[in-house]
Length: 98
Image 1 (tube, rainbow, N blue to C red):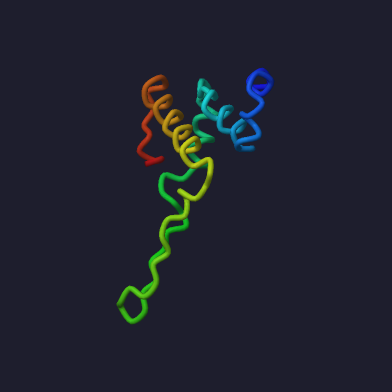
Image 2: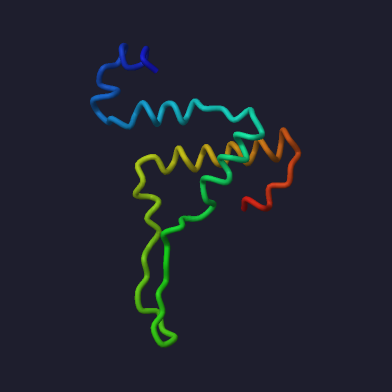
């Protein structure tokens, strides 16, 4: 990662989250314990979406806010990679994580 910053100084200046994005994209899941940990820690659905009803009618709806996370795509991709590793390489049942 340091080589990337040295060769391209604008890499870090343009967006300070780029090194973290790059690290998350390069991360490979090759350990069942790590894959289970990732699947437990990253939810399948956005936990912030809520519907509030008052007297049986929808009064307030809070939209999913996860897409406001600047690392959303990388985190979702990491979870998908962990699920694929468990299903394909370890031949484990992943229904509990869906």
